[in-house]
Amino acid sequence: MNKEIEEIIVKSFFNKRIRQRVLFELSTQNKRRHALHRLCHNYFETLRNEYMIEIPKPNSDPQEIVKIMKKYGAEDSCYSISLNEDIDGKELPLLTAIEEAVGYGMPSIVSCIPGKLVYFETELVSGSPPRFILKR
Picture 1 (cartoon, one colour):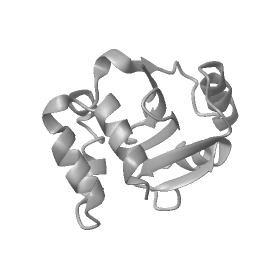
Picture 2 (cartoon, helix red, strand yellow):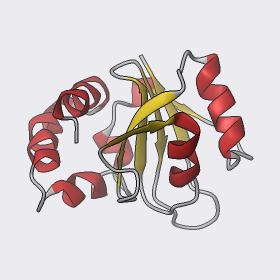
Picture 3 (cartoon, one colour):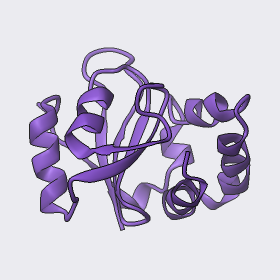
């Protein structure tokens, strides 16, 4: 895990009132999942709404999402924070991270430009989950 990148993501996109708590939870193996569960149903209370751009449906094609992210300046590599353990806390190729996040059913944050550009997928409740670009 890259604590420096995670701190940039949290300070850039999470609401101020919970930032320190989320940073603590992300840095503690036993509590990391709790930090990520905050992004399930409560993501509008957890994340800064002014930076959220919903990706219109249909929005489940990883290659199309990568194209959108690249239009906003994403490069070929990224950093992921996710309940999907295959990508959590890892630097990966952008397409790989998006493919693993899309449709997993639980929240994922894929940071394309730390502090500037993030892909965020919410928890699957019914139908296709909301998917967002967070851009500063």
